Image (cartoon, one colour):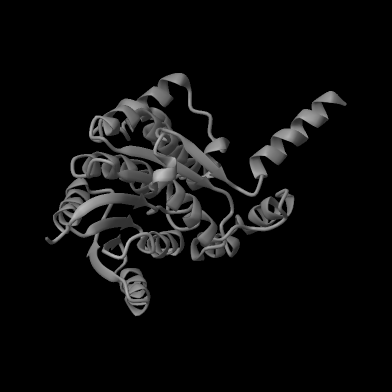
Length: 283
């Protein structure tokens, strides 16, 4: 009797996506890795690396800001076997794009991925979205937070607060607000995913030393990032493999009662900052 292959879909084949793909492929001998990326060069590089390690890999170009593109990828992944795990890592940092593109990729893109894959995920499946500790840098109003959590993908970007940031071209705040929206969207999606017998969670990394962050270090934001690293209780940046370990936990049976939540993986940065503020307040 032939059993269907287990399928793991990875959106974004950069540092965290590649590390997650490699880690998740080890949990089952019959796994097909479905990789997607906006860049053909990134996609080819990741696929070659994984194939050289003996993994079965299929690839597809994708634009997460285009729902039809995401839906096509989701459908192809589901047709290849039992779609058990989806890891959404695709995103743009402030040094990579202007505010409007960040909103389309990081905010709308996540909404598109959550919607498209909910339709095809297998019962017992799990989705993990990569958010960011940068979400703590944005404080959306209750009305805006509700909009991020519940608005349809056709209207999610239709807010004056977002248009103002686009006009100012403030990519840093666009990034933080997008990541706050990711966190809220995952929370709000938990019940709908549970109706499919599946779970959805997010991971908020701190400064992870991927190619994206190294690009940020060479940007005008570089000194700020260095200060964040030096102020982190663990006194270092993180690695993509450390994020992949948390992704694997959320995807596996050990996290079977975990859904609609976020795991902060930041070396203690946010906790350290809060502790410092509380200590200062007592003086």
